[in-house]
Length: 247
Image 1: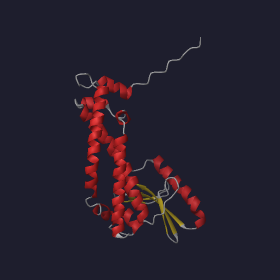
Image 2: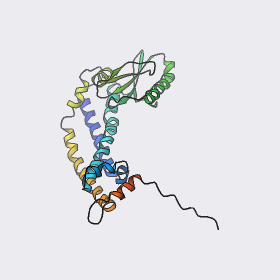
Image 3: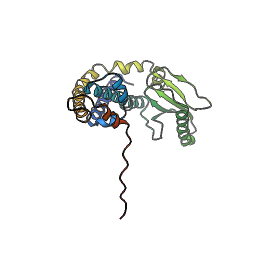
Image 4: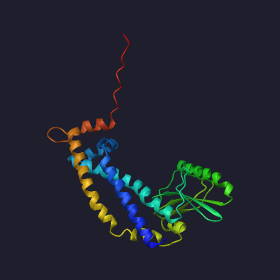
């Protein structure tokens, strides 16, 4: 891929990533991520500041969200465009790479997290569904579970029809360029720093907004944390609705 076009594509994908991050932070509701956290752990750690709880839970939530957003906004479009820009409408397959004799179907993940047996079976079934649709093309079908980083490399087995390719091996296979995986980070240049400066005020505002909400909802008038109220919010069953008996 032409280096100038790749740099422009990386710049666009980084912009999309940060725009989605900003939207996520601005639209978040405190209860959406607070209810999933462990109040007993915060109590056991001796945390006394509302702002510390808010920053910890928001950081954890956004970190998990970032991985998903980055995969969708950065890795997936770059991999698809660099390999020929042939998207797939099939479930479980992100794009395909087609040659005169082969069709390579790629399901792309950010990192090489090991699938459990159920996930492997489902991914194989999704690849099999694609193979049945493409059978009439009379081309060799080659399904890959790709990982944008890592070193995982496996071959098909009796339990799964696809092979894993990660990191350098993955990017080399779909682009033909053994240095492509390095170009992805090299060509970011100073773009992330510029976006971070725009993102930081929104992050700080979110911390302030959620801290004020936490103090209002889960603190005593003197400012100390009402741990029992927080635990009830996270764990208590909803009270059943009253039944109105007919007269």
